[in-house]
Length: 425
Image (cartoon, rainbow, N blue to C red; front, side):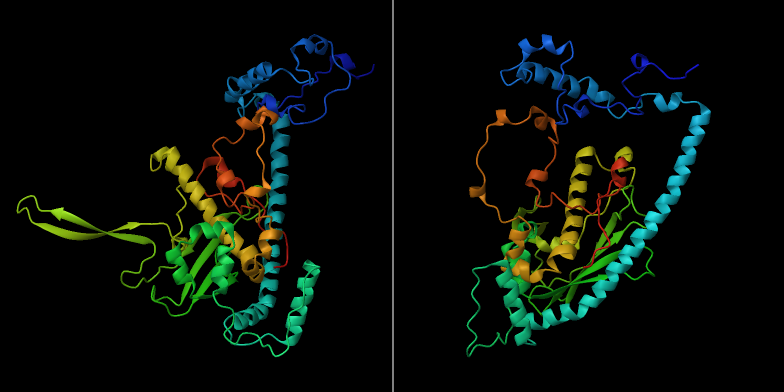
């Protein structure tokens, strides 16, 4: 006797471990509608707009159902896994054991990728040193280097005209304010640099990257900002170290753990991270007055060297932070990680492109208001109005590559993005 189950008896809905929101259905996801209508669709025509889409009233009602009663079910157990026989559950545990070995190999793979990245970073160091020598005017570029640069410019811009070299020599004093200009051409960093900061950053002559040695407990990298003597602080260098967690995250990539910054030794009255104000106070007993000078924190690029501290895993449960404070801290941590990522992956390797502004074009960051036109909200999918309403990505200068989220936010700590892809720096 055949064990084949008649098609008419097959349940078209497969059991799922978690309840799934209605908006994830194929049609809502933008897939094509069936070409053959079922019997119910014939009765729906009167409720459709001339375009063939459901009327806005019905559509809004559906969305209200999804984001109302059904929203509370999303992510909860459907009871399917719990209902499985013990024998099946044992097989599932075995699969998890197989996956443990996969994770171990992925961790080894990412470690080796990091070592390969370190290798090529070391090979590039002489080129970075050469770049630094030209920037500060210690050395002049050779004719071969200038010719190679002009060929690159002509390749990027067919209208490029070679420079007139007759009787001309490269500037003996190098390129003034090179790093300040490069940093300010990055939209995100430009938001952090105040006019007061710019006076100090004029003394920035190099930004370097070094990977942490294998002997360190955690992998990571260090950014070093080199300054000439200035009126603001005594440090010759300011450092920022980014540490990764020892094991790769769930997606198989390194996740940021925390950052450590240099303590800046500010000269008297030159702390750019503070604003000073004079307040008049009156003694309640003697009625005498005095002037008191008070400092308050202010926005500054140099706050970069005092990074936010990740919260404890149970910060919300213990009442150390409330939800709003935790969200704010998460945002600060993510921005801090992204700044480090952009310096490491973009600005340091391609500094001349950030100085000239070419990187803005290549990164697609040179758009202005004239590139956009107003659109009618009615033309947008209504679903979009319910997506990420609390997200600030539209106003955030770092909406794309994020190395990894901050620790301490429940399941969020295991969500990571892709930091290392065995690429050459």
